[in-house]
Image 1 (cartoon, rainbow, N blue to C red):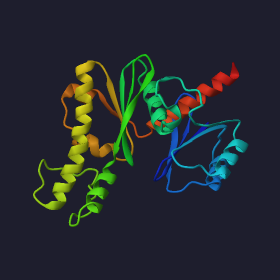
Image 2: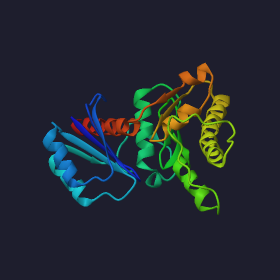
Image 3: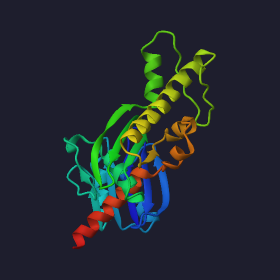
Length: 254
């Protein structure tokens, strides 16, 4: 069993997976320590592990993973991956972005792919059908947009839209106006990327992941064809990390 760990800005996502990519269990931690690593190894039959982080990783976490794993990968820009990375500055590319790209490619190997990760920031990344990661964009996330509207003005309140909330086209009060402006703004942003890509290439798939992806899915009104091209996968980054771990294990065995 593989232990895959994705440390984000606000939480740590963890999954127990098979080499084939089946998610056995997944967890979310507000904070993650070496004691949590020890507990996971004690409770489950874990043999190998990988960790990726957009923040500084505690040395004790890395040491414990290394000590308790038969094969351990500390994922960074030097780690071999099963796609071609065309990013001009690979050392500055967020590991979660690259892992999500690998995850989407493992799920849909022969398609052009738009990968959208809606977390603290929203990232838009593209992988060709030939397996080349060509880059992507970074935009403020939903919570960041709500927060900055409140902080950068004198009278606007802080709003937090509900995941399943039906967002109006136009708000009839200030709270709804902010919710509609932010959530619909992101939804139209997503539709704009999809429309532009469709003009350049008729065949591509879109994968959405991240804590705020459901907000986007619930408010993107698309055609039946477009809906078939959109897939939500909450564990996309973890699936990518598992794919990278398995890829490196196989390389070491050769």
